[in-house]
Image (cartoon, rainbow, N blue to C red):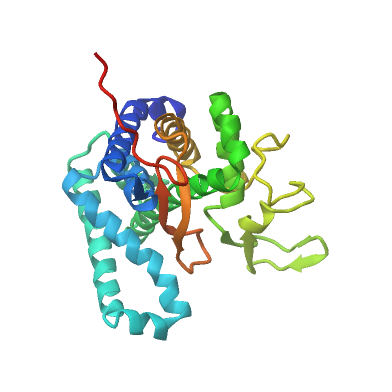
Length: 321
C-alpha cells in the first residue's frame, strides 16, 4: 500500500513543506551553496524516513550510514588509496555496518511488538507462505530500502540541476511552460541514469543478440549505456525533453524488477523541480562538483550552484511606500 497512488497522495503535503524549508535554508546561505548537501541529500532522506516511520532523532544516523555504504566499493577497488586517505576506514566501516543492522533489527522487533502505520511495520510483519521472514531476509530488506530509497533520487536531483545549466534552452522551455516539467524529469533520468547497472542471475539457458547465456550465469545490465543507445534515443547526448519516447528510459529498471518506489521518486522530483524553478529560475551550476568513483550509482556528492545565475547576486528588496 505504501507504493500505491493513494498513499503517495498523502505524502504531498509533507514533501511540499520539506521542499519549501530546504529552499528557505538555501536562500539564507546563498547565493552560492552546495545543492547536493543542502537539498539533494535531505529531501529523499526525509521522504524515506517518513514512509518507514524512522524517528526524527535517528535520521542523522541513516545519512551517516549512507555515506559509508557509498564509500565501500572504493575500498574494494582502491584499498590502498582509501587507507592512505582514512587509515581507520575498515574499523569505522565495520562499526557502521554493526550499528546499521542492529538498529534495523531493533526497530523491526519493536514493530512486531508495537505495530504502527508505517512501512517498517509492514516489512517486519510480512510472511512468506505462513512463516515470518528470516532475520537475514529482514536485514537485506532494510539495507536495500535505505540505499535504494535515498541514493538514486538524490543523484537525479543534482544531475538535473547540472543539465539545466548545460542546456539553457531546455530550461527556458520549462520556464515558459511548466507543464513540461514531467517530460523534463524523464529526460533527465535518462541522461543522469542514477543507477548505472544491476546484476541478475539467468534462470534458464537463453541467447540475446547471438550471445549465449547459461542458466545460473550472472548478467550485468548497464542501464547507463542503454539510456544512451542511439538506436533507441537518437542524438543520445542531447538533453531533449520533446523526444517521442521520453518516458521509455530504464532509470527505474524494467518488468518485474522495475523500481518499487518509482512513484515516490517521481513525486519528489516533480514537486522539487516545480518549486526550485519557481523560486530560483536562474539557478546555475558553477562547474564545481564531486562525483564519487562508484560504478553502481551516479554518485554526485557535491554540486556547487549559484541560486541567482552565473554571476547572480541576491536580489535587493526595495521598500515601497
